Image (cartoon, rainbow, N blue to C red; front, side):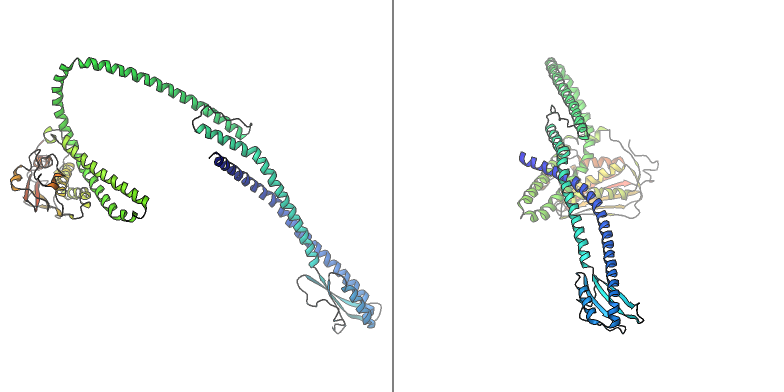
Amino acid sequence: MRRALRSLRKGIGARLSLKINLVVVVCMVMLMLIPAILLAQTYRQRHLESVRRDAERMVELFAELSQDQLARQAYGMLYYNAKSLMGKENVRFVNIYDTQGVNLLPFTGKGSLPDDSVHVVSRDVVARHIESGFVGRVVVGVDLAPAEAEVDRMFALLLLGIFGSGGVLVLTLTHMLQRFVVRPVNTLEESVRTIATGDLEHRIAETGHDELGRLASNINIMTANLNMSMRARRQAEAGLEKLNRELEEKVRERTERLSEKAVELEKANERLQGLDRVKSSLLSQVSHELRTPLTSILGFTKVIHRDFDRLFMPLSREDGTLSHKGERIVSNLEIIENEGDRLTRLINDLLDLNKIESGHMEWRDRVVDFSECVEQAVRSCYGAFTAKADVQLEWEVEDELPAVFVDPDRMDQLLTNLIGNAAKFTHSGSVSVTARRCDEGWIEVSVADTGVGIRSEDLDRIFRKFTQVGQENCETTRVRGTGLGLAICREIVERYGGSLRVESEYGKGSAFIFTLPVYGSDFRKSGEPLFD
């Protein structure tokens, strides 16, 4: 493992050194290569120009030597001179024409068709010392390829020197960077790793007065300060532990003294029981507010459980890891459902005791659109139905339903309680919520279901406190509560002057129907609730 870390650090250092070397070498090569290219181009042009001038002087000299032979038609001498000229390495062809343009020596050239590398020089031959004047023309082709090859060789040698110098520069810079940068950085990294493991006594050896040296010095200062802070913290923890022991001793002493006052505590306990009843009343209000969102949470959890088990689990059977994780997720969802149900029962059992009779419920009555109350309650309870594929939630509100003067939170509590009960006791079919204007000045709301229904002998006591009916049904036993929900619903409805009743046929379903006075009717002309 240590060798691997050492190799990794060397590789990082080598890459850092290589990056710096590449930047420097590229800059140096560019600075040397661009002038070299410009110099080679200038030399090439000048050298080729010199070759062209030499060729023109050579042709002029040949033309002067050929004037007497052309004037006298001494073709043998011309052939000899042309053959001597062809003996030069860079002469491609020599053509001699008479005054009529006839090539007198057609067999003297190495090639009569010039290309890009042949410089063609043409000169008229004029015999000035005789009267004949113009006697012909000389055309000579000079090969520039040797001169260009020489320039290319020089440029190649120059490039070789540049890249050789660059290689030497890379080696030199690598050695210098390894010594002055990479090694100090590796030392600094190793020391920081040691400090990170918790060795706050470790100090980094300062490598100099440069940036790395100052960095090492600052890290040493930081480590020293951190070490002092940790020591102070340990001292504070030791002092706190001592105080805790002293406090525990005092608690034991106080407990012994309190045990001597057991009789007084018995009397105080009776007073606490009275306070506990007040507490139960307060907790009753809080608990019912918690039950509705908890029902929604449980409903969506069951939907997730169902969809996950149906859609994801079949796809994950081929992959052992995904299958294991899927089973774990399903298990977690089941835990959420079970714990949610347990929490619901716990809230119902411990907190919904005397909420209505406590008198501490706060009513915030105002004019509200009752259709919005119904829609809000239906949306809140929708999650409880998504987990039940065989149960449909249906709702219908009459158009232009009049407003009511109520507490919207209590209306939401009333509706969600009735819809929630219908959802719990309905395993197939539907739950229907309807709201309409019945008699003059009244609104009638019905929550009907196709659930298990209620026996006729239980209809009279369904609204009593702490009353549960139909417990002999195994399905309803799983969703039993303390029997306060319907009692709370009746208290809310009756506070606003309405009434709540139930119509049920055992085995076919139930319908809970309540009425409320509309705002502005005889019951609400003053804009105040019936009861304070």
